[in-house]
Amino acid sequence: MKTRKLGTRQWGLSVSALGLGCMGMSDFYGTRDDAESIATIHRALELGHQFPGHRDVYGPFTNEVLVGKAIKGRRHGVVLATKFGNVRGPDGKFIGQNSRPEYVKAACDASLGRLGVDHIDLYYQHRVDRAVPIEETVGAMADLVAAGKCASWGSRRRPRKPSGARTRFIPSPRCKPNTRCGAAT
Image 1 (cartoon, rainbow, N blue to C red):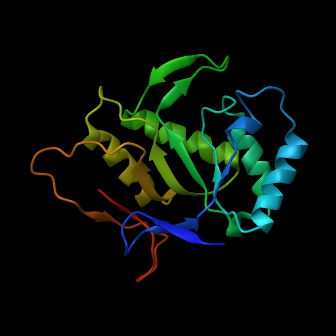
Image 2 (image 1 turned 90 degrees about the horizontal axis):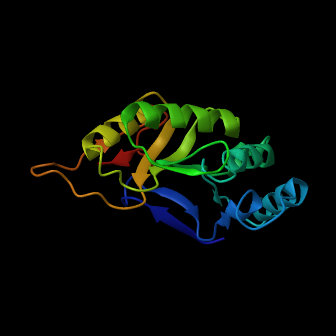
């Protein structure tokens, strides 16, 4: 399986060139079949697709539970990436965006619990929340990396840097010297 590097050359996360979109397994496209979905994820992993696409809002919330069940006992071969920021209620209604630091951290903890894992490889913002200064959101993600809850972080949409901002690398405590993990801000 060909791979792609996300992020910078030195610290980028390597993922399979093809991922498996899991959204439709829990939401939007009709009746769910968890057994068939788990079998599909297992087959994709066997074929070298180690990058299942899932989000906290799919289901809502049930997509991460499904992926967590599918990767149980197979975590070593999986690159887990999940997003935060789009908020849905338990009834599925879209509530809005939230990238406040306390929400970012609470959403990460909830995702870790639903996935049944101790860390997420790539945790990223679904949409830039213009109501929250990007520095606050980035600070919360950096705190999650420092706490070992995420190996790296990102944003689906590139936010504008504040004037005078400098790029810096935030290493994960899980990183060993000369390995590829962490994040650039």
